[in-house]
Length: 465
Image 1 (cartoon, rainbow, N blue to C red):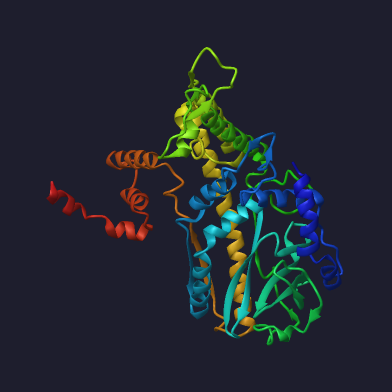
Image 2 (cartoon, rainbow, N blue to C red; image 1 turned 180 degrees about the vertical axis):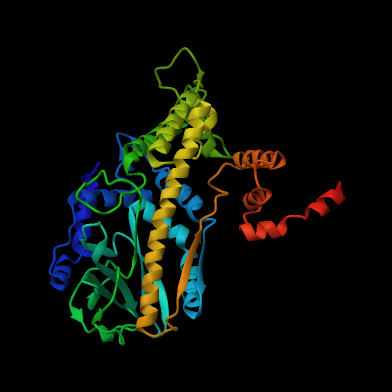
């Protein structure tokens, strides 16, 4: 399975990972581990529907049915679709809010890739001398150099490809946090569309970088000036690595089986197509009309056929067996990726107990909850980085701000379960066991003060009756 990945990985490393330049900048070797490299490339090839098994082999034309991207999409959507991030305070809060609102527009799409590749980094940067943008980096544009004892990424090199007219450039940006001082070193190189690193050129020659210093040191920094996200799954690929793993890293073989099973199902349909085998004496091509359909339906018998002029080939299809087998594989994939049953599989074809169904819903709830917690840490770190840059370049006054996260729950929780919970709470209110404002808070998703303001006076309730 990995032969193609190994060959591609060798070419990718030579072109995309500038080992010599990074070692020259950092004085350190990149702590890449072959097993993580191999799997990252595999996860990427699967995500773009080009897994190593999607090759014509033994007369089988196996194609990817897109399960990896479907898995990440189904996890990313409930994780962020109701997310609301609010920064309150003065001018700085409003400034940061604008950057976060822009970042949120692509959060779901970026999260899909981050879940597929195991990691992503949000990095703020200055442009036009007074604006801050947020770049999202994946495995091929950031290279970890060092982690601290807590597993926090403290040294990293970012790669940015830039095209100016017909020329390509690559900018390497080395970030290092040490003893409260944050160092940023930037270098520019000639490049090509593939990211190959060539001769070094002055940074000021590149548009947008002429006013950026090649070496910056910022004091009083508490944490790295970027937000590092990794999937909330244990790294079962390399126990020595602090990097995250793909959400489908434990389901690779199952996804391969699903692709093969789908091909087998399609072959069952194709090989079972109705045909009429006709003797040469009775065989005559149509003078007009759809010759393609004619050739598809009619086949000539051999010259040795003497008894029958024709016979019909119309076998009984076994598609239900293949389909049910595919659904069982889907169910195992759902289990291994933290999805609930029925997201990929057809619940009607896979028998499940009520306990099993409830357990699968809780599994996905826990998966999404963990992703949201990891994202919250990432975004908090990103906001801190934006705040530091805003202070460094004096973009806004240095005033206080507060961050609040509301991830919502309408997508994650079962709607029927919510209605049943509200009915139980309403009964408790009627029995005098629960305060009415708590019921109103839950039903209308408001705070306690608003709930009390919404409550009718007792005299008003009496008049209604």
